[in-house]
Image (cartoon, rainbow, N blue to C red; front, side, top):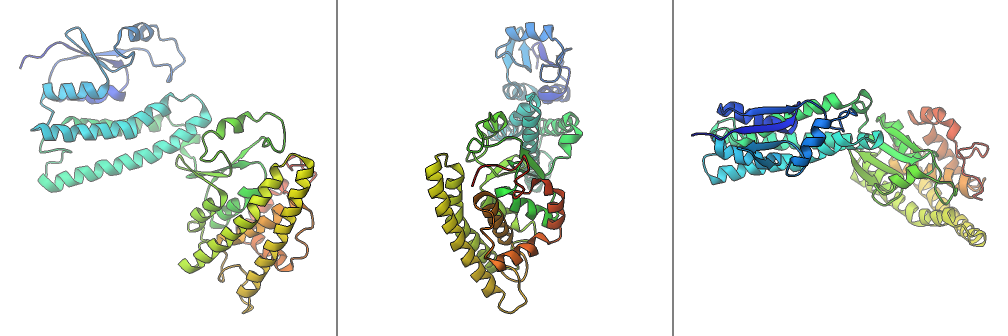
Length: 424
C-alpha cells in the first residue's frame, strides 16, 4: 500500500503524540516527526514565537496535528482512529475497531483530560487539589485497564487489549503509563508527600476539633488546613481565600474533608465516615448505630440553634437566640448525663456507648467546649458527669498530645487574637 506524505507536529516531549509515533514505528511507515523546539506556556514562561505563529494556522489551535499531503487533521484520538485504519491497527473487524475505540475514549475522558487540567494549572493550591484527584484517576484507570487485559488474555491468550493483534488501544495504554511517569516528574516533593486526608476549617477549634481529635487518636495522618480569615458573621473584613474556596466545597460551608480530590461535607458525616479507620466505630454494628443515634440527636437539638445564634447580627434577636440556645444546652446536657449514667451502671464503663471510646464521645466533648466558649462561660458547670467524661476523652492517647500542641488555639482563651470576640 502506497502511503501519503505524513507530518506529525507536536512539542518535543512524549505527551499526546507518543501513541501516534509508536503506531508509525510499528507499521514501519515513514513520517516526519516535527517537534516544536519550544515548550508550551504551562510548562515554561519562556517566549514561544514559533508556536505562537504555528497555532494560528492549525484547525483548533492545538497539537498534535497530522499533516497529510498538505491537509491538517487535528485531535489525537481522531488522528489515532484515522491512522489505525491506514496502518493495519484497527482490529480484525468493525467490532474490534469499536472496542479499541471505546478503550481509547475511556482513557481520554477519565485520565487525559484531568491530566491536561492538572499540568496547565498555575495556582499552587489548586494544583495540589488537582493532584489529589489525579492520584485517584490513575488508580481507577489502571485497575480498569488491568481488568480488560486480563479478560482478553483469559479469552484468547493474545496479551492484547482487543482481539488477537495490536490495535490503537494497546498504544494508548502504553502511553498512559508514560504519562503517569511524566506526571510524577512534574510533581514537587511537597505535592508527592501530601496526605490522603485534608481537613479544611477556620483557624479555631469549634466544629472541626472533634474530627482533628479522631485523627490524633487513631494515628491517622491528615493535613490540618486552616483558613486564616474570619467568616463574615464574625468580621466584616474581606475574606478572599474563603470566598474562592466556598464555591468549590459541596454546601459552601466548612468543615469539609478532602479525600484524594473528593469533598465530603458536614462535620457529623465526616465523623461517621472516619470512625472505623480511627478505631472509633464501636465493637460491633449495634454500638456504631447507638453512637450515630446520640450524634444525630445532638445535631438536631443543638447545632441548628447554635448556628442561628452565631449568625444573628441584630442584637435584640441575638439575645433571644442566646436564650433558646441556653435552653437547648440544658436539655441536651441532661440527656447526655442520663446516657452516661445508664452506660456506666456497672461501674466499669465510662463512655457514652460500650466500654471503649466512639466518635460520639469526641463530638459530645466539643459540644461542651463550644457552649462554654461561644455561648456562656460556666454554662456546663452543673454537669459533673460530662466534666468527668471530658477529662477522660481529653486524656486519651494521641488526643492529649494534640491538645498540648495546639493549646494556643484554645477556644476558651478570650485573650487570644484567634478567639472570635463579642459573641456572648
